[in-house]
Amino acid sequence: MKKYDEKKYIALFIGRFQPFHLGHYKALKEILQKYKKVVIAIGSANITKRDKKNLFLVNERIEMIKKCIRKRLKKYEKNIFFSKIADKKSDLDWIESLKKRFSPKKYIICSRNPLVLKLAKIKNYKIFKPRFYNRKILQGKKIRKLIFERKIYRLKKFVLKEIYDYIKRKINVIKFD
Image 1 (cartoon, helix red, strand yellow):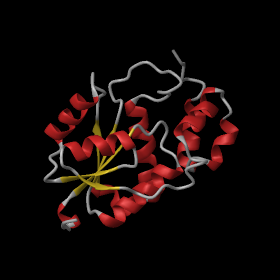
Image 2: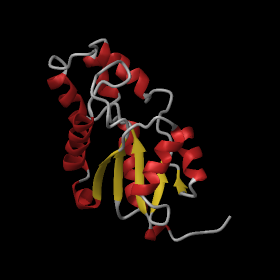
Image 3: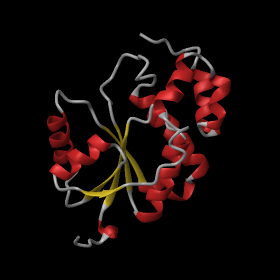
């Protein structure tokens, strides 16, 4: 396998972050150790109705993540950027749209999502797979279920304090379609 100069790439950390949990935070820290600039690409950005899979709208997810960055990753704040990534009709449309905005010559995909990795390879992206952190416990689906069922008190072991406080503050305002 041919080596490449990691320092010349900008990390593209792709996820839905529904919500941003401890696993995402630890992965972001790992990515920041390796790459000077990181774009946090928030998927499903065009979702406008909440459901069990999409509890938070894109601007809410960005706000949550920014709270964590300001509190815990202040020294990296100027090197972290956000981008909204809309869902498309097909996976190939999605990766083509991504490639138009983020060239494989400049960006490296940071993800552990099997579909994202498969699509990234098709378009010749370099890939960095951050480690899994407590994968059996830190699963978005399980965390969303707790939020959907309004069991906020159980979230503390899955999310950072800033996220917990945000969700606790917003939970009574959030209505699910």
